[in-house]
Structures are given as structure tokens and as C-alpha cells.
Image (cartoon, rainbow, N blue to C red; front, side, top):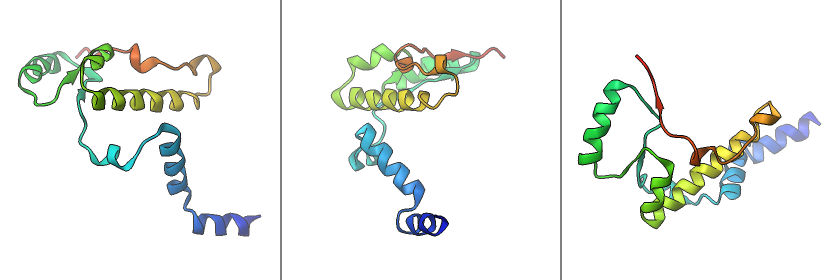
Length: 117
């Protein structure tokens, strides 16, 4: 069996195969990877970051997302990318060890974490 595994890995490197399967499962295409991100998503911030965030929301060329629902106000590309991002997180959650941790939809419910200094 070891010989078969080595041949298989030589013909189809496992990392590439994993990447292909995930892209197929999540409907990620080459154009999705080549395009720049359609928005900036804030995941966490501290007090300093809050000040920067206010400046960014006024001066950034890309929309700044702090609430997941606000992505629905953006163009079709941004909404599509957010749905793919949410699908990635849902798929990742399936690998959590605890059965109660394997819940989907968390990308739509989470606001940025505020870190105390």
C-alpha cells in the first residue's frame, strides 16, 4: 500500500488535490483569485483601531465592512465573495472536535471583536 500511496502523491500532490477539491466544493474559480478583494472586512480592533476605522470609512476606496449584513448593500461581486467566505467558514467548522461547535452561519452573526488594551 505504501508504494501506491507514493505513486499517487507523485502524480497528484496532495496539497494541490486538496486545493482543487475545496475550490470545486466552494465554487471558487480562477477569476475569484485574480480579482482584488471587493471590500475590507474588519475582524477585530482596539481603541487605536477604532480611530483608524473612522478615518478609513471616510477615505478608503473600498467599502469597509464592520457588520456582516451591510455587505448586502454592496455590488453583486462583493455579495458573492462574502457568501463564498461564509461557506469557507462553515466548511471549516465541520472539522471542529466538539459536535456542539459544528454550527454554520457564524460569519453572518459576528461583529468585529473589540480588544481591550
